[in-house]
Structures are given as structure tokens and as C-alpha cells.
Image 1 (cartoon, rainbow, N blue to C red):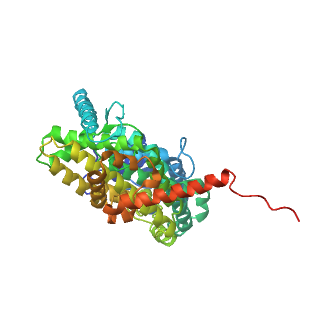
Image 2 (cartoon, helix red, strand yellow):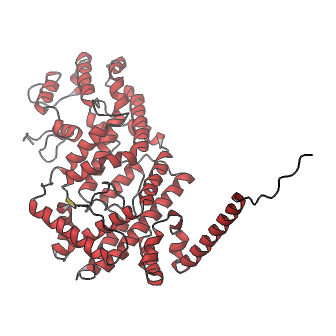
Image 3 (cartoon, one colour):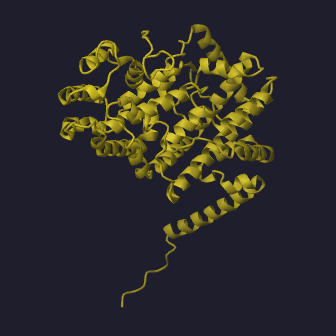
Length: 466
């Protein structure tokens, strides 16, 4: 970044205009010096800061037209949300400390994932993934996951983008400097309609980028967010391991075991991925917004400070309380994620017994997974969706009991049929699961027998006419 003398509004010597443009446009930011000269030519003198009150209306109209061009989502954007900008913002968020993955690190990851497959073969009946492992940089994780983030956040993103744009469009005329003709905003209607989509794109990109600095593998959030690809993120694993008194190779292998175990489960039970995303989509489809909150935030927008248009919305949650249908979807999602993470916890604990630090790593990962971190909380505030297994320990206890009482074959057979999915009642009382399951199967079999008799002609003779 080019060095500039300290300017008003910058506490550390950085240029706020350059920071704003880079935050908004990433590597495609307009030339900062050119924008500054244009602003000074429209009202500033010498090296004095830009003062919007000194602009005449004609110059202001020209400046706002230039800003409109900058804010236009442009090609590659579909609908009101600027998904292209979202990905750019996510990549920009991880770009500062994201070294390329070298050949040595790739080899370490590949060996860890291969060994994890072998160790899991002895403790689970799920089949090997048969996949080559990958070592990703943070930017590669962003690229691999962005399509699914769009799928997950699409409904709420569109609603928020439209609401933000409408609120800004409604409030902006009253925020103009004295003496400026509100009719000048007429040429900015396309920009105003895109403003909410631009801001949401920036915020979503920032949230995904923050997650990109925190996740340890492709399935670390409990979903196959990167598709059916085995992957570890070496730079994040290294930072995670720095706070532990555990050898690096043990940390890497333990995380590889968790990554491979999850992927085996998703491949073993195709319905699981379908139901996870269906619960997310059902929740998102029912999103209701706090419109009054958005309108109050829009009242603080400064039309002379484009950065403020994002700042007043940044970090705020405008998601209304979920209704009954959404709560049911969230409960189903939390239950499924808890069951996945609980199963992974139990299977990996058994597979990792050769590791001296297995117990310590298990406890560390469970605390991390159950509590979430700042990045996950920022994402939850943005879209109202927490990807946290609140009943992780109960789910792990359930799988431990099932394994001890019925064996791993029975345990893995549960995952083959969605109708056998354990319920909240089963987590509360794992000892009664097998009996309840047997009774439910018997009831289903009896119903099937009755239906078969009807199909085989058990209706009796038809009544005679008259």
C-alpha cells in the first residue's frame, strides 16, 4: 500500500480514502491519487482535506455520478446482491497473511489424510473416501466454498439487500447538504437500488473471510461446505497449534482424522447432506427483517461519506426473531450437526488412541466446536444462522452408548436410513433408543403387511348394484 501523510480521520497514518476503496473493491480499487485530486479540484485547495460544504451543486452532481459508476455491481452480479464483490471482499480479508502452500506442507497434509483413512478403517464400517487430499491456502478455501455460501445465504441476502436499498433511498434526500437540489438524486436511482446489495456483498465477504482465517479443514463447520473434497488449511492449523503444547504432526493427524471421518459419513449417508442444507434453506426462506431497525440505521447515512453507508450497517443484525417454522428448522439443523459432530468425536477418539495427546486434543476441539468463535458469531449476526452443535456432548454420549451396547455395525446402519435418525428424546435417553427403534420398525412392518393384503385383493366382494 502506498504511504501517505497522516490525514484527518486516520489514527495510525493510513489513508482512510485508500482503506475505504480497497475494502470496497479489493485489488480492483480505483486509483486513490486520481480520486483525491478530483475531490480537491472540486472544492479543496492545496493539500487541504476535502470539504463537501465548499462544493457547488454542479460539481457535486459530477462527483456523485462518478461514485455511481464505482458502486455499480457490473458484470457477474445476478439480482440485487453483488456476489462477485462478496467473493472479492472475502479474498481481500484473507490476503494479508495467506502464504502459498508449499510442496513440503502439501506432502505433510497428504500423508496425514492417507494415514487417517487407514486408522479409521479399523473403527468404522463407513467406506474410505477414495479421494486425494488437498492443502489449501485461505484464499483457496474461499474459492472452494463461496458457491455454497451463496446458496445458504441467498434468501436472506436478497431480502436484506432490497430493504437496505429502499431505506437508504428513502432517507438520503433528507441528508443532503443545505442548498443542494434533491432532484440531483434522480440520476442515482440505479446506484441506490444497488447500494444494499453492495453493502451486503461487502459484509458477507468480510464474514466469510473471517471464517477463512479460522477454519481448519473443508468440513470444519460441520457441513460439506467445500463439496466432497478432503482438505486441510496448513496456515490455520499452524496458528491453532501454536497455543497448544502438542507436537505439530499430532495436531495435523488428529485434524485429518476429523476431516476424513466427516467426509466418510457424508458419502455413507447421502440423505444427511440433503437434510442439512434443506433445514438451512427452510430457515432462510422464512427470514423476516427488522425493517424499523434498518430505517433507523439509514437515518445515520452521510451521503458525503460513502464509507458511512456501509459502516452504519456493519455488524448490526436486522434479522427478526424466528417464527415457529424457522425454530423447527433450526432445531433440526442443530440436532443434525450435533449428531454428526458427536459421531465424529466418538469415532476419532477410538481411531486416535495411538496419539499421546489425543485426549487433550479431543477436549480442545469439543470446546472450540461447542462455543464457536468471533468469526462464527459475526456470520451468525449477519444472517441469523448459527452453525453450532449445542448438544455435542449429549450426542457423543448417545453414540458411545449405542457402540457399547449394539456395536459399530448397528451404529453405522443408523446413518443409512433417515427415518432412524435419533431424536432429541434419544439424546436425553440413549438407553431406550434400541427398544424404541424396534417398536417403530415393528409398527411400520405391520402397516406394510396390511397395505400388501389390500393390494393383493383383500377388499372383499364389491357390493351388487341396486
